[in-house]
Image (cartoon, rainbow, N blue to C red; front, side):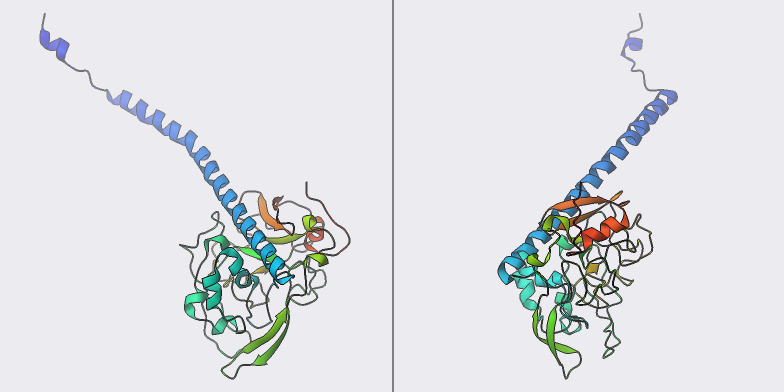
Length: 309
């Protein structure tokens, strides 16, 4: 007997190797959708947690000030609600660097460009890899320069805009333009000398659990930071479209990431858009919701409360 034959090890043939590779490829193909679903679920959960924190911060503001934070302080680049609630998001040091009596354009670049993870949905982008805005230019015309600032993925609900006044004191959302006094700044722009909110929880007569507070704002894919509606979330210009949205029959939820911009809410999650309601609860709303029903949820006092399922 030839002992050398017994000690010889048999290797894989080419066919066997190809079969193994094919099996591995099939397994990877089967696992990849599952991994993607897990990632999508985790991003959706984190987004919901962001909205929960924002809702709690707004409640903290209301508990302290006895009013809701205004959507924005004035018509010409005043601070948005995203700045006003910073102390209630454990961001007191950043808040103290803002001078809310002055316009966004008069703040330092360091504070304008500070990105906070709580303002970003991970399904869309993150605070670490997001470009700055390129369209933050004063509407008043005292400067033509761009003042880049941090972006963000959430907007307060300023109502259904049935009266065409979403960004004014006539808006019917939970958070709207402040009542304010201002004075001309010799260096350009304005000073806010006094302001107070026009809304508080007592004004949400349709019920806190039936009224939208803050939701995911629609930003068309491929236009981050470069289009109206996605300037700095800290800037109340233009028309507070950076930090506010409307919802209703004329402003249904975006169905996809590539929908045209129309002042509407919309997410990068599949099939749903997430909101925090005035009672602090976070809810997912199907993108196919009837626009009229959506508008009833957006208005604070239309006398037609709608309960989400």
